[in-house]
Image 1: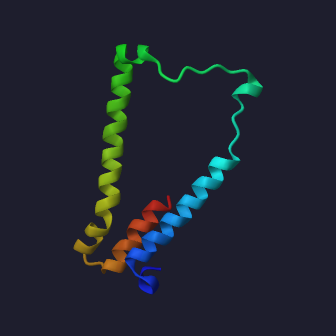
Image 2: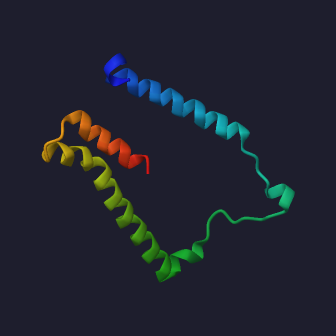
Image 3: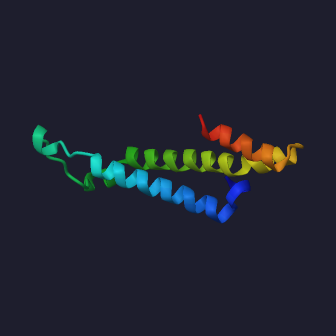
Length: 98
């Protein structure tokens, strides 16, 4: 798509596809809390008093940081080891198919 319509239009087309998909999902989703009779609290202040919460948040931050670094540097690494830019982009896209 980038080769056919250019990078700006490829991003625009991708944004339209994601927006339409998001709107369709938002319209089709149903809230079953009334049918089940569940009562949910939106915010638990007690979590901020627990060490386990901070350990979990720290683990999540570092695991996502490591994943993000790999995703955004994979194509550059492929280029550094001798792949073309197209092959590096393909490498990153195949990694995202996982």
